Length: 221
Image (cartoon, rainbow, N blue to C red; front, side, top):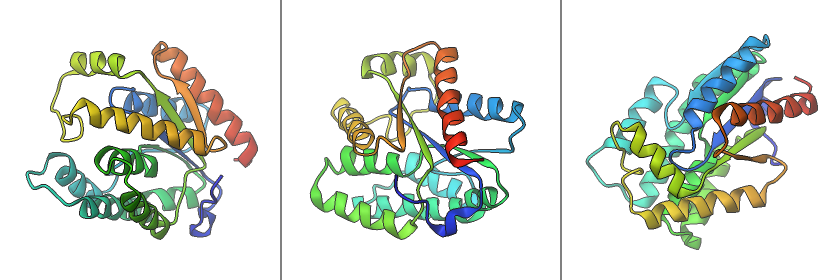
């Protein structure tokens, strides 16, 4: 597991939820935060890109902006939003000893910008990893929600709503993203816990909470 860095940011626990479109990350992040709060933990529920006023402005540009950015600029915009999110929300909460539950983080940037848009090109991955080191902070635990693309498409169709620029990408893009998430989970099994998101919402929630309880025991939070 990669160390947190940033002075270890107090005694809190930093949890991220990752996965492709339609895997249920936002719903499960909310349910996890509610379950942990019910157990008496102080919890910050947040998301990326976003989580602070400045980062939310960048989110709107990245997801719904009309201007196409170069791949370098897009990566740096995600890192800029992340830096503001860390400095003004995540790190202060961890310093207070809280549990932070975050919908997406570094792994999504690697999967979407590195593997999806960048198609796994060595130049793109090297640039992205360099930017990631500059931000210099990693989760304690990542919960990877895995769902076949066919099931995800059915969920997205049923959900409706506004489609962002990543959701609107071609199927080949989404296949590369899922392959990227698989590579990330395989490379760091100590941090990344795979969860079958095709189960009932209740079963997924139970699996996530169990993984968090195990991490809390290890971290001593």
